[in-house]
Length: 125
Length: 461
Image (cartoon, rainbow over all chains, first blue to last red; front, side, top):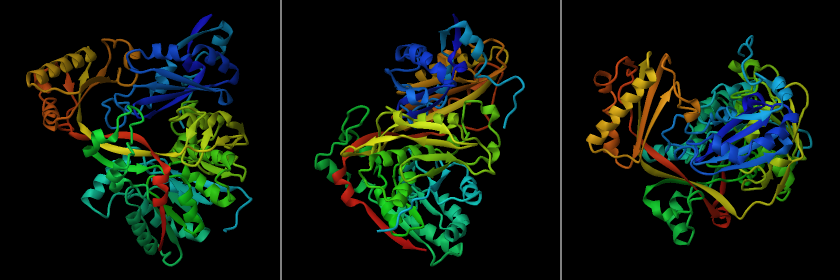
């Protein structure tokens, strides 16, 4: 078994609803979605965001999209125009979640390594 | 009864918020065939800003950008029958429509177009009557009644659904201007109108809601802000905003004009579907509750994603109210510290500043210290900064009820340049600005006290 960051298994988008941030976590490959569903629990996400999320973390599954939706309650210092945070609207909680590491088989680890990073030869559009 | 359509209709997204790419709607009109252009200008805090503008000037309080835009596209819309549906009306849809009619005459379409104006979402004048009649407008997050902050209320608007927009379209409006309509209604109202959907056709309406959710943030569905393989997304300098090709059964294809940039793929569409999502099985709108766990996606050719299978159910007896309340003051100041030990210097400066604020007897509800370039976005997940960090921006914010205290804070940043840790720069911008905080207060209201007050009027260009 090897630890890999979610960055190599999934992409994500985040946003806000008042003082709650949401993070949608989407498997790159459908075959990896069950792994995410098993390992990326609400409790683990709450633990990952220790010191950043005051309230509970809720998780919703969208099996149809190979995606999980997390609600991070009390993550935005009041949210909207109240918040003093640079990321008052929770726009980059997405990649903050992708820092989280999970245990996967060596085979999966070899297959996905570096998936979420700019390829060395890559350019911009 | 207006005749209904059986062919797909093309609803183009042209604006995802007030401040979005000004040229995007032009590209949508000129880049290929479209039947409708939807333009979303409103976010939660926008209404209170507009309310403030209207208080100063009774002819203001709407998204001003919409007027010069219509002046540019009115001739093409009129000639090709492209209908425009927007919530640009803000807190003053009537004045917005009047200005747009003038723009139409300047653009040479006088006598050839009418504007539908939807009103009835603004509860500001009715607030005391409604509260007196027992509508407590409890805060959906805290459970507190609005009574507790009544004096600080700056705006109160109900999220309206598609019905008044459909009524305006049935009245042959080329342009429909609303106040606080839901963002999604701007897309599915045209579908309901064209296909003659029944208001209890919940699966079709739910399909329309998903289409609206995909359209409402502009390029976020067509390659903008897309994390998956962002380096491979071509042509964002001239990104094509999404276009929904809607079928009568509530299914649709998301695409973009062929000659433009960006990408419409399963990944770009999934990212947008999950944006600002709550419980995906229960996406509540005034017209239907959509179940996002029933969405089926399939790639349907280059830059085309088919969306189908969506189920919906009856809406609730309530409508959502967006109340904005004045909630104190804040200010944020910044300084930049350079190598070596940039982060340690910035933290020492923050500690000195806090000591000075204490000595001045200033208290705040909140003081936030961030190091931009290290922990401002990912907080403690960033770990400890290395001593060799080339530079870091110290960013300190304060928040509190007393304006004078916040104002005094803004005068304590610059002195740090000569009285604090060394290798500091980046104070060219002057003193930070004191900002009034407008807090968002989400509440529900019985729809029966709102719906009889809705009105659709027409303005001839």
